Every structure is written in C-alpha cells, then in structure tokens.
Length: 373
Length: 129
Image (tube, rainbow over all chains, first blue to last red; front, side):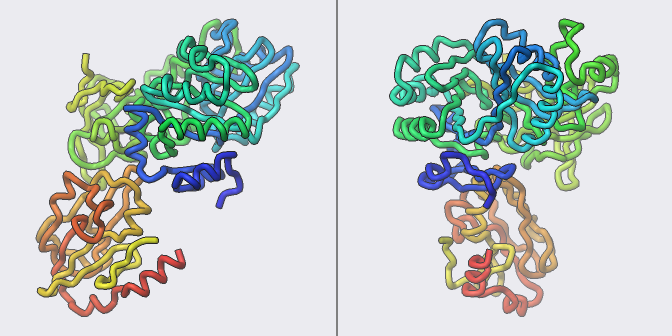
C-alpha cells in the first residue's frame, strides 16, 4: 500500500471504505456505492476526507507581495477579508503547474492549499520565488481537512461540528458569504467546496479532525470517497488538475480565464507575459461541456469532431443526477450546437453546452443539452 | 469474500460460464469482477448473430470509474443477449450469477469448455491476486 495515510485511515477502514492509492496516499474510493454517495451530497449532506491536499503556511512581511507575484489571480482581491481565492499557479510559459486555493488569514499570514499529486512541483516553484521576498514557507503535516457538502451541510453538518468545536460555530459559519472563512481556536472553516453544493471546508489538527469526522457520521452525514468527489465536480463543471489542465496548457485553454487577474496591468505575476501574447491569438480553443445524446460513455482522451475541426474530451463520465454521460472538452471555437465524439471507433452525437451541468441540486441543461432558463 | 458458485466455470478475465443442456454457453461477470468495477452504469452488449473467436472483445461494461472489456470465453455465434441490462446495468452488481448475465454463445468447438477454469482454480486465481 502507499506510504502516506491521513489521520482518518482507521475511520475509513471501520466504515467500509475501499482504499486505493491516490498520488501516493491511501484514500477511500467509496464506502460501498459511489453513486449513492453522489446522491447523498446532492440531496442531503456528505463529508470527504481531503487531508491529502498539501497545506503551506506563507507568513512574513512580504507574504502579500510574494503571493501577488506567485499567483495568476490577485490575492489583493480579498481585501481585508478572511477568505479563499481560487487561482492557478503558472510557470513562465503561462502553463498550469497547479490550481489551488490561497486563504488570507491576516495581513502577513496566508495558507495555500494545493493538490497532492503536484506537491513537489508546487513546492519547488513556491520556494524558488520565495527567495526574492521576506517570507517564510512552512508545510503543514498531520492535519485533517474535511469538506462537508450538500443542501443540509450548513444545518446538519455545521450543527454536528458545533458539538465538537464549541462556541457558536454553526451560526458564525452561516453568516459567511461564499469563499469567506473564519479562523478560531486552531481551525479554519471556509464556505468553499468542489461539488456545486452549499457547504464548507474545514482545516484542523488531527485529534479534533477525528472527533469531527465521528460527530458528522453520527449526525448521518454520509462518508463520501474520491469517486463521488469526481462525478460531483464534473457535474459542477469544475476542472480537475491532471485531466482538464496540466503543464501543457494555460488557464485560457480550460475555461479558467476568469481566475487570471490581468488588472492591475503593473502586477507582474508568473506567466503574465506569455498569457498577454496568447490573449490576442485567434487559435485559442473553447472549453465546453458535452452531453451524450445516445447510449455510451464519454471518457477523457476521446476525440471530438466539430464543424471547425477536432477537439478532445478532457474529462468524461456518468452523471448520476442527469442519468446520462457528460464531459468537458477542449474544442475549436465557433457556434455549433452538436458535435460527434468517437467512442470505440463510432461517432456518437453530443450536445455542446456551457458548464456547469448541475448546481445546487438542479440540472441546468435539459435532455437535449440546451440550457434551461 | 467473493462468491464462487461451484456449478460454473471461469476465465482469468473474471467471467463465469454456464453450459446449458443444449450445449450453449451463458456468460457473465463474477462477483469479484463486479465488486472491483463498482457501480455499473452502462453495458455495450454484442448483437445476436455476431461471431467471435475465443478471447475476442465482445462486450464492454462501464462503471462510474472506468470501461472494462468483456472477452468471449469461446469461439462461436451469439444466440442471445441480456437486453434488460440496457436499462438496468445494476443487475450485474445485484445478481452477477443470475439476472446480471451478459450473453449466450453457441460454441463452435465444444472442447473449449474443458479449457476454462474450474471453481477451485478460479479461487486460487483470486487468492493470488
């Protein structure tokens, strides 16, 4: 088995988790049925152990200037708030080293939460850029990160969390707007997630994290694995690093232009010049959603045929909410409502839509792939 | 522990094969296979009348996780397919040795039956996995 396990390994085993190797971590794929877990998050509430995510504390006088140089999105957008910012970390060519969330905790204190699979390349880039700034980087280990998601996450989930965390946790959390966060008594809780549902993510020490996991399960919040996490994020139209983007593409290739802060123009972030040159290019692809109109299954890597040339499915799979196969694809720009995807040598018709497919329990595209009003 | 009925034969691709009185072979996925695959969401079955050699890919089952090929355990012609899997692929998970059967093949060479694994051999295969 893989070398690394989260502080919740025994908890996963005791509730029937099917453990697999994910980027060197032993993590639950599901606890019996990933489709049931998916529905639990869309209809009630589920909890994911995402303690494999890499945490780095960035502190010091130069912390803010450092992050404004490092990240494609501008941490200054957070102002004086305690909040998270979704952003890409780029290389000099403007290509994506990772996508991550940077939380502003205080003027000179930030937490960067990045993917497990890219931990080494992210760390190397962060360290390299840090040389020019008065900052200290401290990787945080042996901690627990939980994502509590679903229409009942803020009621059932937060209420259960209050029994462990004390104070007025649930009501303080409920007062936060999306992406805002609170830091208190050693934990950070944020109104963020990766499912398209309401909820929160919480960062805490191992012992409190174990107690919180137990309290959530006792409150009948469903334990959910990596499998459901993937189908939920796909329905929500959210990119997955390593599939929809990697270090061969820029944020402009995967629908993440909105996360790149080109203003103010004097902010010289990593990859800026490369993106400026690309922005004028007419050859940039579009990043679209696909809904398979017939039977079959979209999978990453399949070829897309459009009236304007070929494209590729970057993520594909089954949507439990829609009962159909959906995918994300990098395709040529142009106005076309349908395309064909090559599945085992046969072209199958797909509707081309604008993601997300599902949000807050509601299907946003109809059976023909058209957006509902 | 996965269930391994003693009245069937098996392949090392985790398929089970049952010989009917008529000599035709009914094929499905083993309990172990469906457990490994997770929730099944789509099955691409062969057409009745199609011919395959032993070892040919003749069907595909897709779980939420991935696609998995199904190989013909013997050469011959497909004489029946389980059409109900089109709408309820979960029958494979719920009843792998019953309602979850995939297709039925009329073998060209009845002796190929002898080449299949018996339940003990299949159990050994699982133990070594």
